[in-house]
Image 1 (cartoon, rainbow, N blue to C red):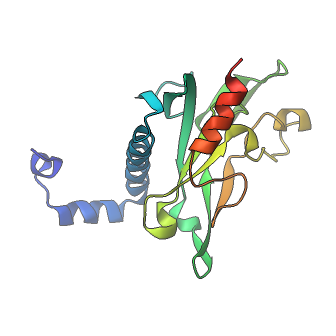
Image 2 (image 1 turned 135 degrees about the horizontal axis):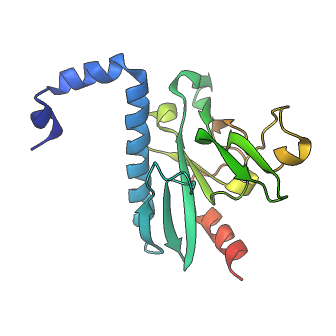
Length: 197
């Protein structure tokens, strides 16, 4: 039995509900993006033991993890903010996405300092995957290594703290530019080389 049958609603009613509730659209798009990404990764035989983390587990960041060439990789999945997407020329787009923790939390920085922040940390996950569906109406992702992402510029943090804190709002363009790539496997190869002893 489909959810539509179980909930006793039509596809038109579901479309109406989603259209009237942009935050619901965002949640659904995010989960569909995770599903599409898992399928993309699992299509490569080098990827195995893929798991989806519990969204409520605040101890670990990243939405999914898997083993690639014997090395565990964690991935944070984000989506464009639909309202931020602009066409800057024929076939050229720019948009922003939130890249932060869902809640403020106390974290330990590599220098030993503890701070309260919503920022994700340098090294807290390995790979970022940004869902670009709102650019082209197709399932594309932009991939970047955690260490190549922009740092926070918030003045409430010291300069030393900012070097460990990722920016909470980031921009991506189409066509992609550094640090983003359209395919993840070259980046995964780099991550594996860095993580292997």
